[in-house]
Image 1 (tube, rainbow, N blue to C red):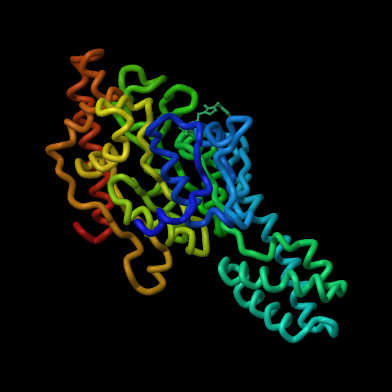
Image 2 (image 1 turned 60 degrees about the vertical axis):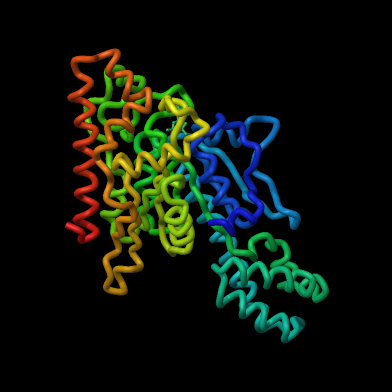
Length: 377
Ligand SMILES: Cc1ncc(C[n+]2csc(CCOP(=O)(O)OP(=O)(O)O)c2C)c(N)n1
């Protein structure tokens, strides 16, 4: 985690609220993969702070490499990302057939042929393909044969790409869910990051299926009455989707491991990232939003886990519960530290206690499910 902070972020100076829980996840992902990332962004806070005209926080490094970013609709962001991925994959197929042709070419040098072969053997490996690209491009320019000219027309597709899809919980759990499910089911190698603020943040905090029971939100003015949807569990049911729940402020190491593993997994990944938001009304202030993530995990409000389908093939349990046994005695205090829960005591004093006990009860039920999956119960 510490070393990663020496890498240049390719997401900087965003227009997000101070203390936003979403942006640190994005900043960190660009430190790891920014120079070869493509991002499809759902409409929501993350599209607004990323495209507040006339500037964008996405930038490039000294070599001119940086994330390619575009915003799509709320309801089709995952399909949009899948399209980006399939489009570049199709073009890279053409690069592959041209490189194979180059192997037979009389004009291409033996050194170039070694590089063509190296690319064909490692075409999804960014480091190898970037190195091959840097060496090959001047050689192909010098060679000038028809095959080299055709490859040079597609030179931006020589290095492997990392496809990301960003969206909030409103997009992921609700309005874009059909598409998210479809894209997960496709088995394609895309990484979906859900910036989970448990409300529709950008439009002022409407209730989503991620809003937990007891939380006050728009359309749930007296506190939400039913429990939160478990998006991760739904995705796990496929058995071939890498799924994780993270909270950077609670465990930066778990977050870092998950992000690297999810990106490396050759299939769909879904990372659900707990993101404190101004809509939560943190009594400690947004300056302590990372600490709030830790409090959420310590008291059992949020749980950390990852499900790596690759482990199943090795005969291991693919599900790992990464957070420690919570201290449930801190749960109600945690709720009292956020206006979205605490104001129930003022507005609906006769119902507050019962509803907020349900918040705790459902958090316990969720953890029970995770423990059973982890083989800890
Ligand atoms: C189909 C559709 N409905 C509503 C909107 C208006 N809208 C734009 S952003 C947004 C909230 C997004 O919430 P979420 O996905 O949770 O992301 P967050 O803002 O919390 O990061 C809404 C409702 C829209 N753009 N498209």
